[in-house]
Image (cartoon, rainbow, N blue to C red; front, side, top):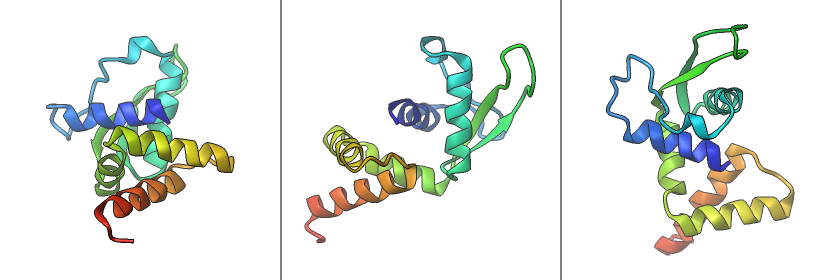
Length: 118
């Protein structure tokens, strides 16, 4: 989940043209296949648009992000506050479930509580 959040933050802060691909400048800190896999997961969840640039190549596959979707912006806004992020992950770990969809719902609920909307 932390790598996924970091990918979303990198996409949001990128000044690249969203019609192209966004280079993730921290990829050397992780195995390339792991980063690509998380990009695929984020795309599958509808949080980003991404493209497979090299299926079956030397590194297996290389998925590159293009832009955040509206849902991706919502998720990232809900995950922005570090306390909410930590608490959301803690609650999901406690429940034994780490889906992006459920994490987004938990983060949104935490934000609603802070705004006094629940």
